[in-house]
Image (cartoon, rainbow over all chains, first blue to last red; front, side, top):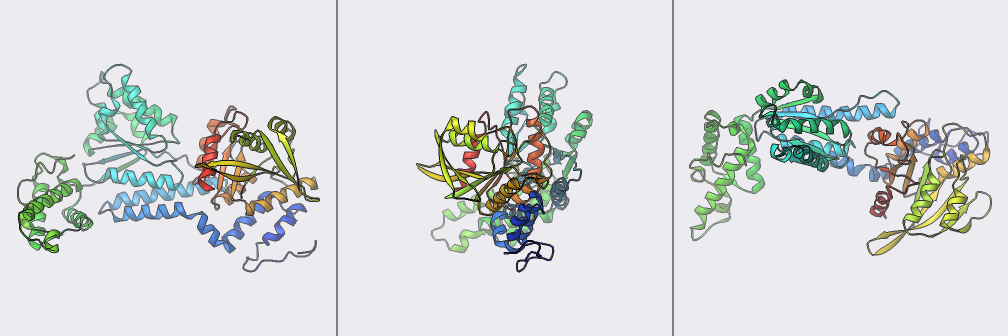
Length: 341
Length: 194
């Protein structure tokens, strides 16, 4: 114990500026420090001496955040999207820190437009964002509610607002992901889609701290949609374009999918797959999803079924046989398989 | 037995919350243990209404020293006991009255050992001063939660969103100690951690 008037003893390991926690109570009682200062000492002492305690406390969210970022990094390609997600996260952290230190903090408007073809990673990235927003405390739940025109637009007057509000309600605390958002403006003035847009805009205002709205869709259509609704453009400060995957990226995605499912390709099968992907990219049959991950998945799943058919007729099968996909399994027209689901 | 400590500025509703939350958990009589610095701790038994009348007041620092009561928190089919300790209001500045300062020091002593800290605030205005220091400390602790009280009064729902943003990963539970709303969430918070 220290006698009054003496320099308080410092605990071992405590910095020169940090008085011992033990003496904090005495100094508070004598009126030498305020309760706020006492808490500051506690926090600093905890940071220096009680790392173990801190590790137990902080961590669940920190760990989840680290895992989520890992998952983002593992996504093939999408370099610019990943950079933007990291920027967003950093922005949130810094704005919070500014607020805590009494500096003015920008209000965080996180509604977004995702532009890109189907299967370019829009939903996957939205899901990851949900988890990041949850871990950073921006959203309470961080779940993703996916919906499209049919879920929002009703059949008679008043029905639309009701349906849209229902979806908004489900998404409170998380992300409302409207796929093919541009389709809400389809059908002109008399269409109920406009009512859905108005209801969504109102919800963005009413629940601006509890809901992030993401409108997703094809690049050109989304562009047109935003240009024809000038009010919307400014409400979505974050616009992300998802480029089509390159052939190399599609092959990488295929490798990841196969590895996850414990299959391997023979050299010939690999060539066949590459040729097939190249062909679809060049002649997309008027379909926009030729350059995307979903096409790869469908081709691979179809090849797995054909491999199974080939093997089931044999009298004996080795472990290697069960894992190997041959060029013949990739034969045939996959156009149907390439359709979005 | 785990201890939940209720802290905050004077007059944010710490004692009213403690008493009404106990009642919400089914207690009709409160066994309150007073722990004065000089002298032995003693216990008084109050009918719940009497506790409200005697312990809750509008003048600041009505609670001078630590007051603990035992809560029965339902946990599955069992009941877990948690000590809820109500404390003296903490001020931004050094308080001129030594008895109040001493009571604040007692509160701080309890902070280190409590399993839960309920930081009661009035969300009508942005957090500042001692509230910010408590929040920064609380963000490093696992059982910390902000109780945004007085939600029945005007202006609070607007302030709540800003508070939640500021608090970040720390849970913010909106309650009204006088109307007894939001208590289920508080019970769930405790239940998950006992």
